[in-house]
Image (cartoon, rainbow, N blue to C red):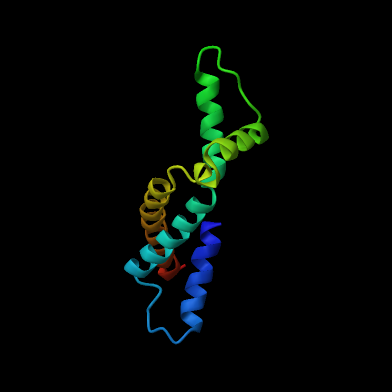
Length: 117
């Protein structure tokens, strides 16, 4: 998902009147970070459910609920906000992690493409 957002935003900027070189290291880091943040935010609810299942299974005598039952419990007890527990931290982390990764990847790809074969 994050690479799709990355490519869509790059394409949008190239096709728009925005004067920005999308192939610079800083631009790729920012656009990649945005893609990573979107992907992280969208997957927060599934991460909350997965983490809760794992935490429950690790407790001695802890009963493991199904994902659907746990989803119902979280919604009943905490509402929709409970599904987005930790969203800011997760989104911030992946913004920087994916921004760094994609900018390095794109730079290495450009260097490799410029090598004589």
